Image 1 (cartoon, rainbow, N blue to C red):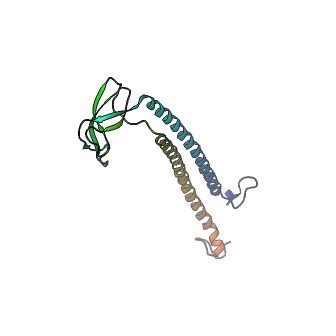
Image 2: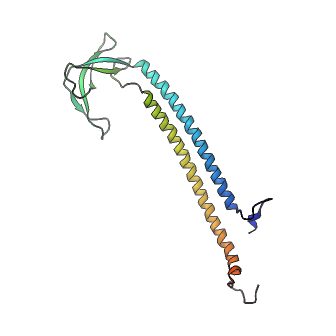
Image 3: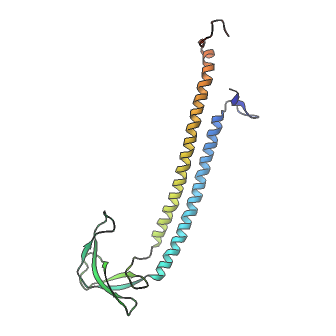
Amino acid sequence: MHHRTKGTGANPLRRHADRTRTRMHAAFALTCLLAVIAGFALGRAAWTDGHRTAENLARHRHTVTATTVGHTTYRAGAQPSSRPVTVAAATWHYPSQRAHTETIPVPAGTRHGDTVRLWVDGNGRATGAPPSQAHVALNAVGIGTGALAGIVLAGGALVALRLRFVDAGSARAWDSEWAGVEPLWSGRLRPGQGAGDD
């Protein structure tokens, strides 16, 4: 059991495996701290980039009033599980001298000749609204949380794997030491030991 007392002032009951476990727990705590910092940094970067993109899109997108020129129909959603979308042919002007006619999404119950608000790009083509602040914030939180969770899970998996090796080695060392101590402690003779042997 000489490996228990390595180092000046070492605790004789503290094994190398115990010190390794302590280091692994400290490493995991440090990993969690780094994960928080990285998650915050990535989330903040995503917020800044998303906010800048949203502002840029908002400068090039405009709302116009479109007038429906046909009856509403239904179109399949973008995803197989999405609900059908109500659409209708509509016309609008943007810029003011250029007329556009396209089939666009409209609220359910829209009739021929009704007006709807529509987002268009700089060329007057129908497009979506620029990302809202809530959308940008949700995306930033998702990226930051994902980074935090990924780093913590990866670090936790590595620490858990290392601890499994440490525990296996500790168990083997314990079995080896116990094989030498148990016969003396219990009074049981070891194989090859005579009754008068010490």
